[in-house]
Length: 116
Length: 114
Image: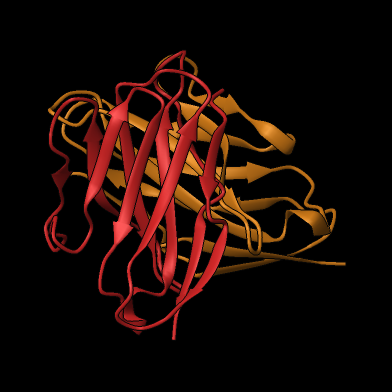
């Protein structure tokens, strides 16, 4: 079974400070991991993904995420937060095998607020 | 990347009516996915739509309530039937991008049932 946990409903950080949004996962087989961002009144925008290779992946808007297999984590990070980063962030996982390969399992989302 | 267009973007619907949401993709894709995001909630998969076959529904979702069409490799529709206020949600279409492995989403259809 596939599942994703985002343990924090909210993350608050001051502009210019580093930010981390946490995600842990459970998956049968090798994980394909994703981060999406949802701005108010918008759909989901793809930020980055991990499929294989380097554990540190870089994505859009200066975000990066580190895959840690032993801890089954895929935390989203950014060295210096911007007020415009304030949004809802979703971590998602898909299986690399099975009958519905494109199906994603989502965490409940983390609301990031960056204050000036 | 894949560009996904959804219509309508927003609508206010009367209780008991039905609404059909369209999803158009700028490339041919094998599978299309329909998700629901209820207010303040995460995304829940409604069904997977393959061209040329019946949609596969997730537990808790039935074809009578959410009929889906998939007439070709770039288009799908989701109908929300006999709507009630509990159906007020964002409905999102998603596909796997042409390079594989990345799942893209449309902007969503924001439905409010009154």
